[in-house]
Image (cartoon, rainbow, N blue to C red; front, side, top):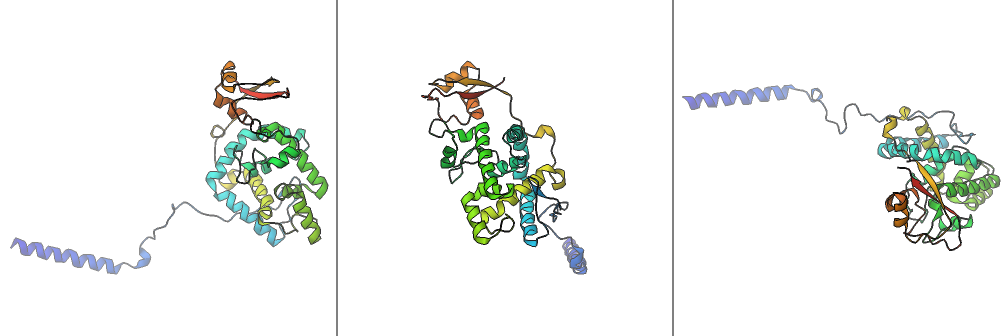
Length: 300
């Protein structure tokens, strides 16, 4: 008797389940998504008044609009990289801004430096190094000391002075700051020869290699996003950003045989010394010529 009751109960459950399942329309079942319900990818509204160093971007040209839109989207939705750029910019912009002003460059060129190196002391696959990503030949041509012992491409003050000299010459040759920025990527000859061959005089009218085609637009995108962080979804507090520790300058005009020992005199480790003086490439400073070097010592 008990087995019969259990069998009957099981049949009732099966038929009831089938009835309800067949009675539910597909449209009544919530669809599963691959993202959080509040996460939305929005098209961006491009500001009409974009400019580089005061030079207007002709966004009424459909091709220019599309290229600008691409870089703005890429740099807005690569969120982790974008947030890191905000953090590092807070560390180095206060150093760069007065240097740019001192050397007669528009403030917008700080975004070029950011686009070049992301403010990371790493050498590129092509051999470019330092904040301004100078190649060895170009750095030496403009007076930077570059060898196995000292590499002034990593010296912010000296490399910024050289970058300013290069960019001002480019502007004088090519006629605009926008073309000077493009030439920083493709070289003065590379840009000027194409302008001449295509009989145009604007970055926005000349056909350049793909990397240079995107180059200025990426700088413009970084400028727009970093000037208006909340507009593009970047939310942070001041204490979330990186800062550069205070340093004092020690001038040296002699050989330093051991930088570890040198650093200990000032209560800093070799690692701390190299972090603030990345241009020192070995555990010594040869200085056979008696040149005056400025070594930064972090203030404890």
